[in-house]
Image (tube, rainbow, N blue to C red; front, top):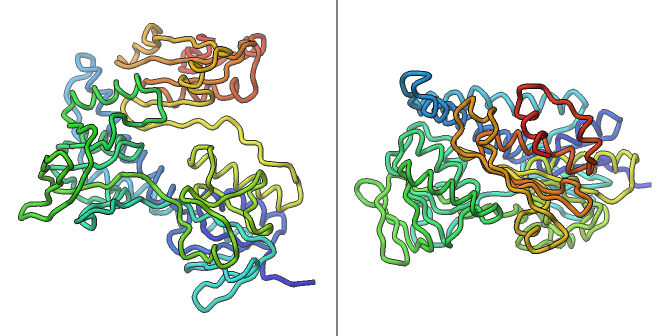
Length: 443
């Protein structure tokens, strides 16, 4: 019988790995993790945790502005102070996660791992073997292929800016572009956002997205639709961004927020026969790749589910149970919510409004949630949702725009995942007053 160094060896240490690897190792399974960068991957170090920390003063400043006359004075964001606070929040996370790994005797091998055969990974001069290997290398920022692209920066650079540039140009119209435009604008930057097409956040309900764009426009953000960047050029004072319609934009700093792509290069995938596409590694319903003992987890997978932290955590836990011998069932994804951290938020889960409108088996209920007294406590200015029901009147989808959209969708999530009946919903008695009470009152 072949003796391997590990029962399970992970390449990458993000949420697609550590959430499941820790309980797996605690059960006595021999686990190793290879990491070329910071322990914990993108989300704790240069993604979700950093972003929401930088956004917190934006939320506060919006609330203070909306409640003028009840409170006096305005709030301004101290960018260096905000950045310092971000470091206070996140800088200890790699050591904290590393401590959890160490507590269950997981070996962490620092360096870049490359597959040399189905059971072997090399890390520089080090060679490690495992019965099963999990590729969890995540995504990285896409970079434009244009002259001067090296003058643009990515999302990690933005979240480490010690001084906020006065003139900021953002290329892109997805999560990162819209969220960072919101943060930078609130902190006082002159923001121009360049959209290749006519729509931002195209996977979200567009009437709500347009409300966000209108609000940001009124706050001073300039949106250039149906515009492609053709070149970026250094000038004496900053850079110039040139577009296909002849526009030249003078800027102090350029953020390339044109998407994220899977980290599949230089891993030895071709050498061992692991199949992948431009969208990531191909897997079956047990997260198995084309090589039976090699699996994938997290954002590096080519999948229809949203590439978000909760998805990666779910996949990591699924593999943990599988490798522990506790289950051999196919992965059964739950309803996975998503949110855009603009101000206000847009959040959604389940069946989309677009899909429901194309299928007459669904019923859509529209609500102006600003009619609810509770939304007036903080003088909210935005508040609408669309609730989608199936033929048996089970709630199967929801999308909302409001300051509290994320909490609303979290409140509705159990009803959608478990298809609660009206009687079961009636058994839920939320705290009063709370957003949960107001939300369930709509069902």
